[in-house]
Image (cartoon, rainbow, N blue to C red; front, side):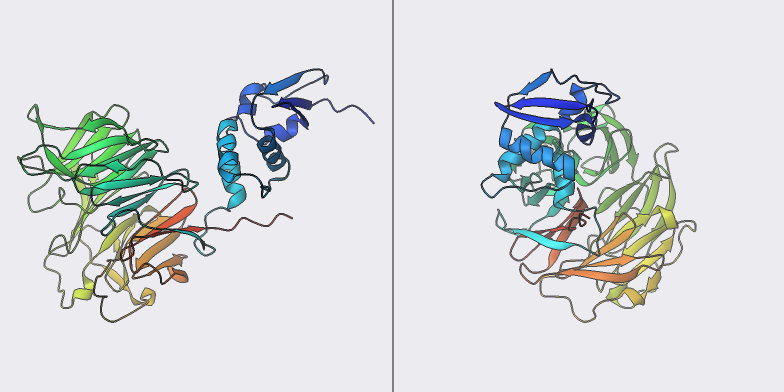
Length: 441
């Protein structure tokens, strides 16, 4: 038998391990092993070199087995937190996550954990982080959790109400808040997700003067841009744009007469068309306004409003909206979870309501939570009372429902990091839904 040329020997905390470059290549170039060896992984060893790593040998054994088999087997005597810390050091967290749960599929999600509320009062928003963590806004507090659901120091906004929150990356969070009358302390800030430190504030300048403003809905675009609806005390009403790397304002789209961009409930960046969807919805305003803004041309390229529409019953009020670029349409939902579709190739067109997607009729609960929409990897999600419905296919057929009774109605949900987070209103708890890992054959 010939000698295997790619064998590698490690001394980890005094224990000897032998493996192959082929196994180590499974770690990827962004791992510690990718940095240790040549970029072609063409390791030709004579078995005389030994690489010393001053880390925990028990965890190294588990992670090495993960690279060999793609299975994660954690001994009962080992702390998962310790293993995750070591996986972070080696750059293997993505491998650990993919071994714990599979690629996101709304039709296969199962409830993996419920986290009790950490603040009094109803939650404002929940946002999934890019690495599987999340943050939850309650009033003037934002609670941040990493992907292990370990809570970081909370972010206290000093009694300023949080309007929206969003992840720039796994280390940074943007928070928009209301301005307190006469204080000039509203706006937005970029915070560290790990320690809650304020890194910098985003400012609005109007006529070469810095203005106080209330920041609303947030969205994140290409080229490291951050968008926010803005409502000021002078004439700075509309949507502002900032560079997330520097915090400097780069643009501002001023509100046209008759529209409500500064009060927008939802912003969504459309990568394909380089436009921003801006939606102001009922009940914030008596009428709904949805538009697409092109910042390059400085104009509104598409708009829709229900002003003048023959609304005879409240059930046709639009509660949420989301753009679906693949079908050139905007999906909207009403309080009974009717899905409606507006063709964005026809400005000002009517809503085509689809009653096939309606799940329930009747009265709203005593403390209603209006439905929310999300689009993720070709699946459409809609929350309603204490459940989330999943729609698939070109006709958006209902394929599954995620439901649990504890916690009351769902006031917000978010998808990211291959997880779905659902925030309940009454008991102020949130659920974590995951896709089971595929079987190892």
